[in-house]
Each structure stands twice: as structure tokens, then as C-alpha cells.
Image 1 (cartoon, one colour):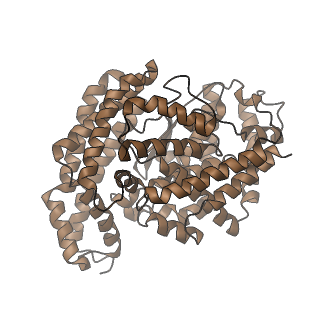
Image 2 (spheres, one colour):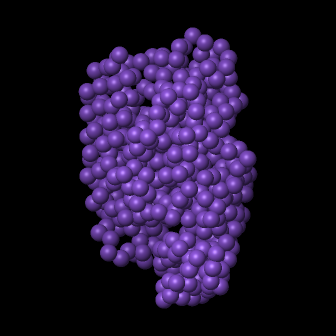
Image 3 (spheres, rainbow, N blue to C red):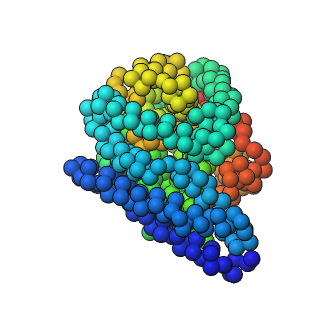
Length: 504
């Protein structure tokens, strides 16, 4: 069947998916508002509203009409166009997961998450994990019950959650990969960083007002390809990206007057997510393929922006004059070389989102090990703050002074996103491999130094973005780079970076 000769059944299928997509747009908009401008008193009513929309979406996704269409296509695939078959495969996978959940349990769970995120904000304000703990226990209990519905032949309960964010990913695959990553990071620290000369980075904490930081972020993310006619940059407690559709993708950051790097890199990072969403081809509109193929691939695009562009010395060769212009006299005594070295200092930190690229994966490995223990070993959640501190001491040599620096720092568990964290580390590895492949074809350093970003944007659009979710992660990375995922390119790049920063 040609793309133009779409069967009546596929037309009905796509109409149903569009109705679901419109609900998803509304839910996403409410979610964005909840993290940005929603009045704090609105929490309970908002949970009801989100629950209502999610219930309606659930009914469409698992209802008799969807069931009949999926059964029809399973019996006769010729009723679908080539694109329709790709959409069907994703919808079928989502359906088989969602339809196993009792509707009442699902709706109650969505309301719980909406409430939990507000409680998480309050617990952070009071620096009290105990305030959030009852909600976390309810979320974990619900997740374990859902796993019992979903589990088929997975080796562990946690594998069920991993697969939802990174299809095909398992503990058996991640354990050796993360072991290689951890040992590689330790070698770079031992051989390059610790015996090296510590760069000056005191100037990084000079006062830069929020308005100036916002102008900086706007200017730089726009130059890197973020389309402000299709998105916005706002403020939230935790930076995030949320896409209603490819024409409305919103990013947020947060500000600290004495840490401009946090907001700037946060904006650059989130803009990488947004570029992915903004550049998916139009034919996937109003289907589950309109977003990224996996969270690991999605994170690779944000980390590519942040680590391989935003921290790159060649990027700052072009950008630093504009940076100096926007910040006035604040950094007038700091030359480019000093700035770049200070910008790329590595040291252990307590906050994941503020970690440098070299230590960042260690933050993820800690969370991965805790989540494994929660779902595979029935870890007592009351022990989380203690175990969190113990692992930070073990991996990074530091311990948090309070729960905000520790177990309350991430919103993911309040949102029910257990199994998501490994995607960040996978994103680092994907990004390193993508950057290596790009370097094989383009003179990346020269393009960055000249401020010629369009070829770099186009390369990613053609190899990654345009496909949305139509290719599986392994197939996408193989087609884009010519080989399966490996840690070697990320580790090699980090070694080069820190030799430049510390061995001079």
C-alpha cells in the first residue's frame, strides 16, 4: 500500500491517535504550568484535573475501538502504510503495557504523582525527607504492583522499568557497562586530574544578575538552534524540557547570582532536548513517534549540546567575545584560556545537575544501584538518606549536609520515573559516539570556532532528530555512527579534555 492510499482503518486509527495526542498536549501544558507559574494553593484541584485527562487518555488507549483496530492490523498488516506500520508497532507496545493496568489504579496513581510533586517541593523547602517519604512509599508500592502486571520474561523486576525508558536495556547489560565507565573515570582522575595543575576557577562565582544570565542563555541557545517561535525559556526549581508538539517545546532553567554556569549549561542542556523535539519530521505529528525514540537517545542530544558543544574550547573561541559584551566588566580581567580552563574544572559535587561531565556518571551509578536495591532487593525506603550518603562517600568522597543536597535533590521519584536515571549515563555514551562520528565527517573544531553551527545542527537533524521514535535506539545509533554503543569514545574524549585542562 502506498502512503497516499491510506485505508479507512488506518484513517480511523490515526484519528484516534490524534485525539490521544491532544489530551497529551493538555496534560503536558498542565505539567509545565505546575512547575512554573501555578499558584501553590491549586495543587489539589490540579491533581483532579490531571487525573481526569489521564483517565480519558487511558480509556482511549485501552478502549474497545483501539483494541479492535490493533487486532485488525495484527490480522492484516496490509491495511497499514509503511509509516502506519511503524506507528502501529509503538502503539501496540504501549497498549500492551497500559491495558494490563486496572483503570482505577492507574487514575489513582496519576493523582498520587501530581500530589507527590507538590509535597516534594515542600519537603525540599523544609529540608525534610520524612515529609516526602509517605508519598514515595506509595509510589514504590504502586510501581511494584504495576511491575507484577507488566512482567513477562524479564530477569529482574527492575528490568521491566529500564525497558520502558530504554527498550531492550537490562541490569545484565548495564552492570558491565557502568563498571567500565566507573573504572575509566577513576583512571582519568588518578592519571590526569589529581597529579595535574588545578586551574583557577574562582572567577566562576562572581556576581552575575539573573537578568544578564537570562539574556546570556537566550542568546546562546538561539545560536545553537533553539527556535523561540516554537518554544520558550522559563524558570523552575528543576530544569526540564516539555514538548506539547514540535511547534511548542518549552525549556526551563534556574538561576544563582553567584553561579552563572549552572543556568547557562542548564539552558544549553535543555535546548538539546528541545532541538530533538522541534526537528522531528511532520509526518509523525499526533502519533507516539513524534518524540524521541528512547530517553537515552534523548539525553544524548541534551548532553551533546552541553558537553561536546557548550564546554568545547572552540565554541568559546567564538562565544567569549559575546559573553564579555553581555556581562560588561565582570570578566574583563579573564582571558579566554583562563576562562575555558576554569569552565572545565572537575571536582566532586553533591548535586547531580551541577556535576561536571567527568563525575556526572558517578551520580547516575549511585542512583542506579539504589533503584536496583529498591526493586530487586526490597530496600527499606527509610534507609535511603543513610545509604545515599554512604554511596556518595564511597564514589565521590563527599557526604550531603542535608536532604536537599542528598535524596531530595531530584524530582524523578516524585514523578514515578524509576528506571530513568540510567538513561543519563547512556546519553553521555551515545553523545560521545555521535560526536566521534561527526568529527569523521566534519571539521567540528573549525565550525565551532567560526560560529558556523548550522552544519552541526543539520548533521544531527539528518541522522537523529528527523526520525523521532520511528527507529529503535540500537538501530538509530548503528545507522548514525556505524557501530553499536561503546563507552570508549566518551572516555577518550574526556581524557583529551582533562589533559588540556590539567596537564599544561
